[in-house]
Length: 240
Length: 240
Image 1 (tube, one colour):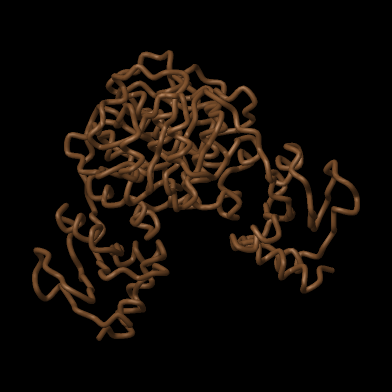
Image 2: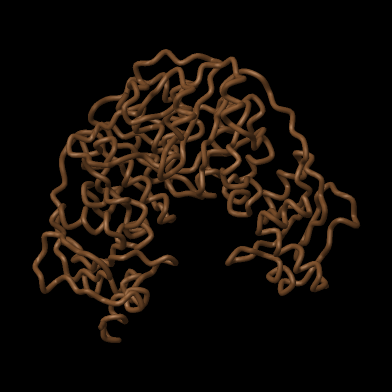
């Protein structure tokens, strides 16, 4: 049995201000919860309806009815496990290597997909501008498919970060140079911009290189690629 | 003023069976509606609240109240224009070139993103298995951002299609060869599989080449890439 107070707390975590107040976030689904436990995220509580045999302290795992799980789930089709975890206050950032900087990404699905890509392509560091959507937003957490546990993510003033970085800064721009013809270094900052407005002018001014993915369709009038698919293609180019 | 009957018809078009019955589909938003008109989709009716100056016959454009537009919109934040178009019964397919075959894609967002990618990379032909999500599904139509108007899409028995094709067939598989080390031909069929189950065994058996995007993260345990981001990377490889 989950108390009303508990339900209220857990459902409030869909909002950033309550996540920041309680320093907690929610992840749903057996696989995702398992990944976070394995990655040493601190468990606050795990609610489950069925079998449960993860390696956590017994008093943290609470068997509940399907009805109760439905009350705390944010999914249309509730999964069998809902985990509440502590937001880590510190993650060690790594110097050098391939790093991605996000300038005002708004869509949770896009951020989730980019986190998954950073995991796949071994990006050492994902730096988000302060107005980028929160990575503990439940839709982001679900879209990362567990990659959240393996990618170092930080929120900071990206202008300062870029100024202090020793890596070559690449921005994406429609008028940039053809990415397929570039020599791409091992140590690099790749800056990706907001879905509607692209990269801020103040950030653009700091870039050493401006690159673009050329359009191939003869009759294509596609105006742009989605930011997550563009990130996929560019990370692939840096790594191939 | 829109009649209840009209509202019922338009909202029914969110379901495939009614789209097939009436051979109509819905697109929302000024830009998208404009793209479809430009691409010579036949207009059934355009409903708008504000200004409207597209090049269509006057009796097809209906000025309605915001309240009425809300009744026919499927979006949380209704746009200012809702267009109802005829589903084209015939689209000329093009032989050769780079073609994409989808085996059971279920997620409307994924299909929409793939259609947008096909537009960007000049894919001549997008062939969908009969169990792939319908491209006139409103979520797909919105996600294509107008590319729906420029990509040749057909639904058919993909096994037959592949058997009758003269192009080299590429499938994606975790155990496939590193895509970055392949010579990729101009005429090719690229088969992408279902989000959960991948490509059917009967289809796999028809492939000449099996390719994969290698994982680069040293500590990465990412199990797979999302099908739309994988399509982005592979189309980029074929075109670069």
